[in-house]
Amino acid sequence: MDIKQRTRIYNNLCSFARKCIYSILSVATLPNHIAFIMDGNRRYSKQHNLVDGEGHKVGYSSLMSMLRYCYELGVKYVTVYAFSIENFKRSPEEVRSLMDLMEEKIEGLIKEESLVNQYGVRVHFAGNLKLLSKPVRLAAERAMKATAKNSKAVLTICIAYTSTDEILHAVEECCDEKSDEVKVSNDGKYEKDVINVVDIERHMYMAVAPDPDIIIRTSGETRLSNFLLWQSGNCLLCTQSVLWPEIGFRHLVQAILEFQHKLYYLNKQKQT
Picture 1 (tube, rainbow, N blue to C red):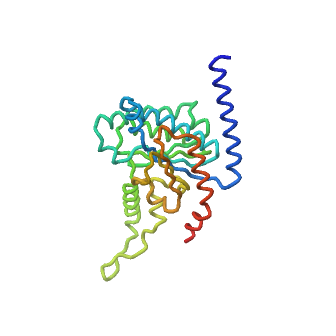
Picture 2: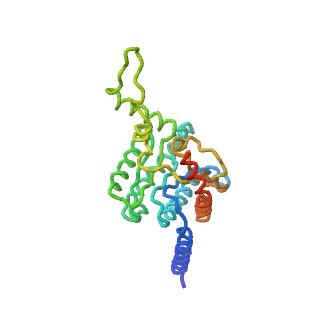
Picture 3: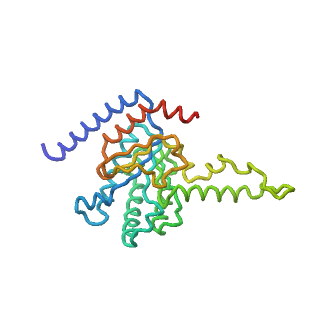
């Protein structure tokens, strides 16, 4: 038996084992939306003496595995925090390297044999895309256009994103939209309730997806780092001690089991 045959058998056994675990998890309520803060790529590179950028490449492989597990399980919405606006403060060389890597991987998403086409996933990019380099921005636009008809699941990639920028953008859009409706009373005060929460949420970058059920962050950090602040009021924040390139199937299962265990409390919080 050659290496290819052994690898095929091993992969089939892993796939069968995952299906068994999915069947057990499906007995209880499954999350509809899981978000990931992919933290620890640079630390992984340093710990393993890799050249700059290699940790992010390994991290991309981990992302593809996580997406596959989520879509196999039937999770419809997955959101990943790929690049914060704050990351532009890093050295120009690192930013340029990350932009080149993102362009390459985004182009890979729209290939016919890619994971997003295999599972019928629509790709959406959330953030201030004007801040991206032109090649990356055009690649993102092509990916959104190429997958627009996919309807089985949604992958939202937060890039050039922070929650504060998202909220500011939504408020500005609402003000522009409602400017004709704003009326000034006789005493010089503006009328109230011209803009409401529904209006703001409609203009959010993340309007394409419901609020997350779980946010998973790696590297042991318990901060949200300006990610989905508006949407995360009643979701489970699950912190994993491993670095992002080291995340595996068991960590996803652990997060889902914790979500199912705390679901009653989470639902009760939403009602208050």
